[in-house]
Length: 92
Image (cartoon, rainbow, N blue to C red; front, top):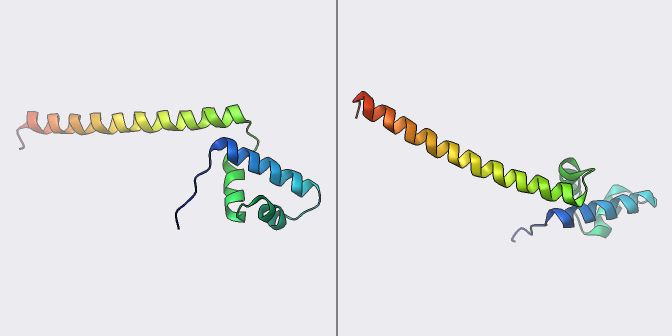
């Protein structure tokens, strides 16, 4: 079975829906079932997106993508630096 990925906007919408159901007196398990979300996913999403608004969640995802891109650049430069250092030392 393939995993279904949800966007940040969809996740925040589901979290709000579950909060409303809990406020109406449902338990977390029942609210998650009504929203079509597993309890583990709910707790994971709540830890990551709890209290965020739509625009904040979008900004968070953009920053995570930028951070990943920068980490790849640093890794490439570090590798190039190590190769040049080894070649300059004559240990090849």
